[in-house]
Length: 36
Image (cartoon, rainbow, N blue to C red; front, side, top):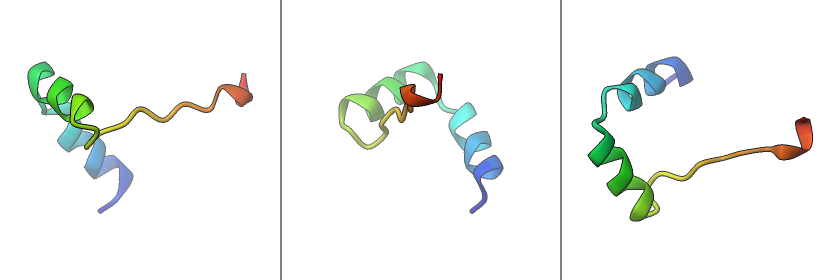
């Protein structure tokens, strides 16, 4: 699955579902602060 297709699926998730996925660590935020 390509990144854009995956992004579309995540965009359709409700805020509650997204929060639940983050809390269960099934979805994690990735941030690279070194590229500022």
